[in-house]
Length: 303
Image (cartoon, rainbow, N blue to C red):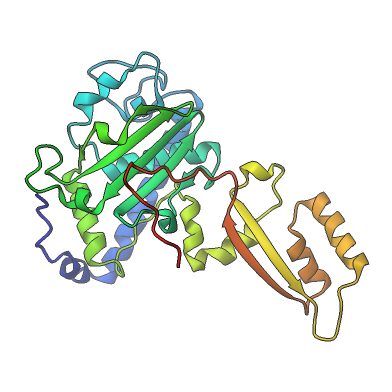
């Protein structure tokens, strides 16, 4: 069912000259910036950048991604024909990411691999206003269930909640992957060291799982006004230089400066006491949505 499964896509990627890879990457980044601006400009005036209609409008027979924002008049039955056909998983993922990040960057998207079920290829949960979307792709979903009456072709599952009430259930639909989806999935599987799936303007809390991002994240952090909505939670251990103690006055000075400037205490202490050893752990904050699980999907055991 996957036309690319038996093709050597890794060899195809390795055959492309690096200068062409760089050129195409640059063109893609420029296109992403242009499309994202169209998206945000439209959203400011409640206009869908895809179909041109109002975000809160619903026209039966004219399906569009903005249907997933629960426009007035839409019902579950309207998705039945829409989701029988490929609609582009990676495009829909980007759409949800963009919407989620316009409200609360990073913190509205839980795409942590560490919270993905052991039986799943991919799980992601997104929050936007009073809506929650969640994807679930099992390893067997990715290939299709052989000899099954439903779900025999490669597909994914989707859930949608409104005000914490389920509107569309995971098992309501087996949404077929598009040809482009299957090419991308196969390429990522065959050449994970050569190809990386980026999320322009759509980064989620999963950025914490890439060590290269941690220093950048830490450098940009400010103390949040609301602990419960913060995207990150940090814990720091500050160790005085050998044979020394940290004066109470220095700690009080750092606390007062942090309250005034919103700069984390650990950064202020590093300036005030350059020889101190500071170890910081960065975790998802309270504001990140919990990963929504499909029935039967279990979180893998922590090591």
